[in-house]
Image 1: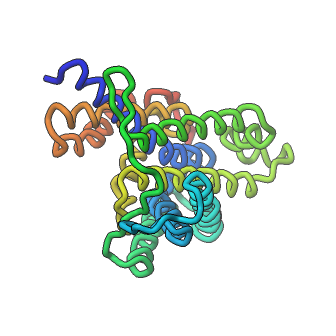
Image 2: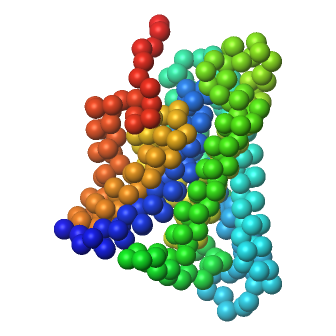
Image 3: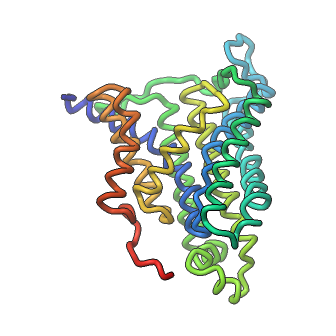
Length: 308
């Protein structure tokens, strides 16, 4: 059994891990909320975000294991690195436009198979472009431990938690208090009705993909600052676990995606501290089976009958 201080330490580590899951899960849940589509290529967008942050960091002088001092201050370089958001947002829009929009009126099975195909395609394209060998993300931030009472966390994990909190607050504000957010909620309720009320449905769907992809890109950069090892397949497991987090919280619910991601990260960390990392990797899938058996709509989802 873990002592109280050790338990608190694992919970704190789980908050950082769960924040990454939450950033990715929001993309799943936003797309599903509007289109009722699971974008299984979302984990690959997370991977691309890490690589799109890697190259600008190198160009700005942040070379792995280099003794040279970069010419650009770390805070400025970090902001420029987050330009990966724009690149991944564009990719998300292109994927929706080229792969999903032509199948919008097709059966769900066609869209599901297409989503899996896009995921495999992006993985293999990444292997061709970035090669199979791993790369070390530049150390843009000197990792230091920060003591918060009985808990000691690296400053990179605190950065993950802080940036995630800011982005989620901004997303909640946008969805709740802006006209664009109102249009998103209208499309989520009924795209046909929203279209009759003057909402440009295609624009809102593209924007939904762009926002979800941008947040996955942020997750890719943040996790690379904490765990600086990039591979073309690095998005596979985080993408699957973020999908589990979205289902756990209630697919289609943004607060549910955040809660599901945090809960999954904390449970994984605690189980890893008690039983080892081997068992912690299975936690997500055990939780998925349990939630589907006990409450298929998720913690924040609303159960209801589907009309046929």
